[in-house]
Length: 417
Image 1 (tube, rainbow, N blue to C red):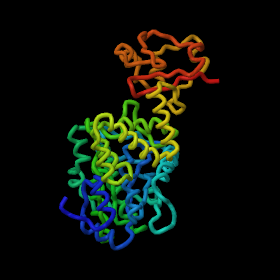
Image 2 (image 1 turned 45 degrees about the horizontal axis):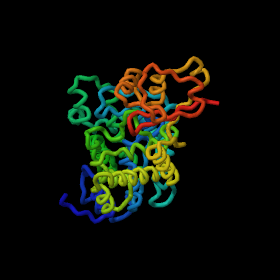
Image 3 (image 1 turned 30 degrees about the horizontal axis):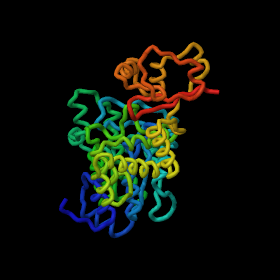
Image 4 (image 1 turned 135 degrees about the horizontal axis):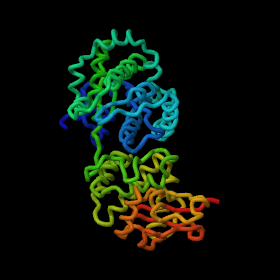
């Protein structure tokens, strides 16, 4: 990049690898130097928790606030009723208003770990677009806002084109999503003086729509900025694991499992992830990322501790590291491992070890569990499991047992009561 920004925010995010595109880097830089800039990222309430895939942009908002900006977390109480079609093969399932409100309440808890909310000039604010979208009059909206949108142009956006090219249906409901997101930017500019929308690079078309609409209706100069869509070095989408999404809520994923996800980072990704997901100085991230052999494991532990400390607190990170050390170095049983609780009824007639592997989340199916056993990948209290027909009864579970799949995935199995 040839442009050398003067503002702390742009200098920081460029150096750390957050920037994919910006609509006008120099003008945004000038605005950031001139005073406090409000900026927003939108989050549709499609689940009860945010996940690791959201973390890049949450860290972006955190740096924005640290560098003197005013972050706005916009909850999509309105847009979630429509569903973002961007790069999806099918329509999202529609949620009830009650489900949406419940999801928003769950997501808010994670934001509070990263941002300072309040009434100060750079304090973050949390808004819900249902505040203005729920009140819209359809005919007025079509006449005042719809006339600014060209269907030809909307069809040219990659997020829509990719769906149509696969000849998959795109409902009129979903087609409206980009108009509603554009309208969000207009309302945030009108109500809160918001000058910048940020998001993943898959949101570029939606962001540009909002800028065009706001310029036409309010004649305001506003900006868009996107982050790269992250994949791991082996080409997988960031934030996905064999067990599913890596949730930020401790109710949906234990701090230990969250810590373990980062501890298992591929060697080639360590330096990059340290820059994006921690606040360690860039030089230290580069030094740790360049370590080789067994030394890189120390860097992975540092990464896991830093990221877990930000989300769950330093004590949770230290407890996770201690549990990992106990499990992996001493072969003991840590307190913090994911736990499967079985009732007396579950084991009254014995329960197959194959079923327990599945229920503990260590295998996707009975077939997967049997393959794991056949390939010598499963262990019970660190002893190899060789018999897929093995049954566990109340006697075998009188004290907790440790089940393992491979070297890195473990669970405790306990009897309730």
